[in-house]
Length: 439
Ligand SMILES: [Zn+2]
Image (cartoon, rainbow, N blue to C red; front, side):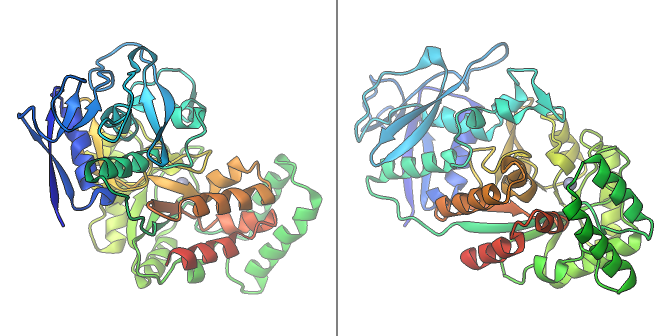
């Protein structure tokens, strides 16, 4: 049943309207709409304690007002009803309202806005960078160890309970499968074993790992076995769920892989299309602010797919606010899926549900739908410090604790499983079990 909740606000800001739109579009808020009115006696007020409404959310007046200069933010846990909620507050603006069933304990709208707008990446408070981006160790959720919890989705659920005065009925989480294809083949020629052996020595890999490498090369070259990265027969799922494959195409940056031949590209596209995957582009590390190069990549992919390409994910998740956002918009990309962590498993935006990104330079949303990554295999391996047991426990704990009320975009590379096998990680088994669990 649909319900409209009238909201009176003393704040008038496009940032508030954007946040309200996000909440109204959120699947965990389905059936309920917040509508702003000019009537101070509306049932929900966003203001101060003097309001005459029956429900009240206090205004912090910080992130909606921010223009420039230094800023501060910290996370504060609030126990509210039976759950723990995370507020984003500035030290100077902490409210001291005592919450009850009609008074929300903190400014939930600004807390949501902080995470989804990527405020801290638009206005980085530190120079600490990795791959030209704010280092993940300086992200607020990482600093507080909250990245494994979809804190924004918890706030949306709490708001639903606050306005409905009843308990939210939990739902099974949604899984969204994606793959980045960086390396089309492990052994691109007879001589590529020499490069692998050089890498083996450079990275000081243990000698016991040498035999499996030579065996897989031998099998692929001389026994007509499939290349170790050609695992599409089981990696690509038949499940009728949302699924996208992102293909690397062009680029010569040192962090880029070898570009595929037309034949290699056509092969993967045909495998993906047979399983009804959407095909997106995976632009070069260097192509993060340059729309003419993005356009070239997009055109090459469209020539192969025969359809318009409107999905994208940056290689290394290399994303600049606002330059990458504007460059993708200029070439007609409608959805991006770059906002995840390279070094951690978890929710960089505080949510895993798709939503429209915010453009601070225009103070409005931009028509690019972001599908935040919740889990990426290589990030899990990094967080696990390359250790099998750590990897498996991070993997299992993350999916167990997010079985309900989450949207989980996961990214598994075709090249990852070979590396996992060398480290004795049962990645294929974990992946197949994950598909079964959420199917
Ligand atoms: Zn990549």
